[in-house]
Length: 140
Image 1 (cartoon, rainbow, N blue to C red):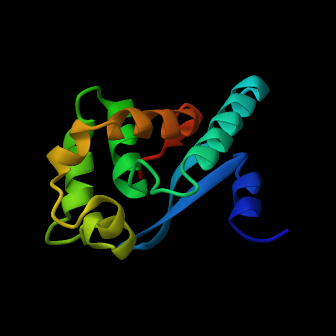
Image 2 (image 1 turned 30 degrees about the vertical axis):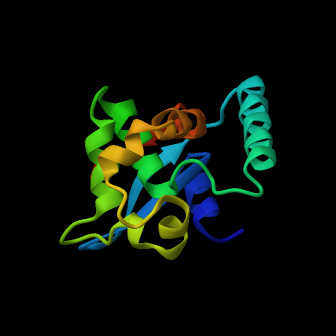
């Protein structure tokens, strides 16, 4: 078998995430396996979300939601700044809100602060916490 999955297995990880850095590819993190009952609960939750949101926009922007949940997992209270930075962009990063689908669902002019005042933060945590519980970020 070839590819990132095989590379991760060869290194003793169940799954790994590669990132591109100045010096080429680097191992950014690795995933473990959740307990079977936790995985089943997370999949049931995703099925319910699919059912509830199949005809309307998903309730949380994917990248800003991940930024929020990942930052909160590292340090409580830091999620809002991370999500706003991803949602609104900056000199080195395009704003997620400028993507066509996000502009349609949430509005291109919606501020990060306004985005986070609704149920977005709760949805971000519900969606991403199961994955973050088995994620280990690696620093070079």
